[in-house]
View 1 (spheres, rainbow, N blue to C red):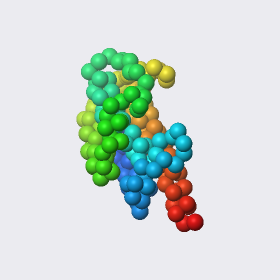
View 2: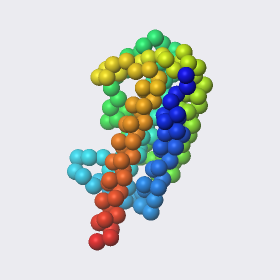
View 3: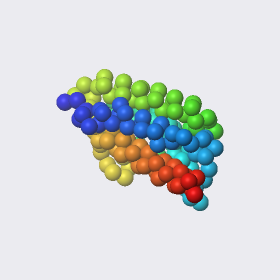
Length: 160
C-alpha cells in the first residue's frame, strides 16, 4: 500500500505555494520583525528549509532501526536553522526544492514494509512513515500559513 495520494500530492507541491505567498516582497521586508518575540516571515522560511534535512534523517533512521525514539525538534537549538537565517532568500528557495526532491525520492522508493515501519515521537507516540509524513506536512502548512498572514499584514500596511 503506497503513501496515500493526498500525502503524495502535498509532498510534491505544498512547498511550492511559498513563492506565490511572498511574491512582490523584498528579502528586507521578509526579514523585518512584525510581531515582537515572534519569528519574521524570513525566519519561518529558514525554519522550513532547516527542518527538511532533519525530517529526511528521521525517515532514514526509521528505515534502518526498529522504532527509533526522536527528541522533540527545537529550531532555536538547531545550528542549521541559524545558518539558514544568514543565507540569501534565493538560496533558501533552491534548497527547499532540493531537499523536498530528496524526501520525495526516499519515500517513493519505500515498499509496503518500509512504509509500515515506525518511529517514536516523544509527545505523540509511535507513527508509521505515512503518519510522520502527514505530521511533516501539517507542520509545514502551519508555517506557510504564518508566512501568509505575516506578509498579508505587510501588504496592508504598504497600501495605507
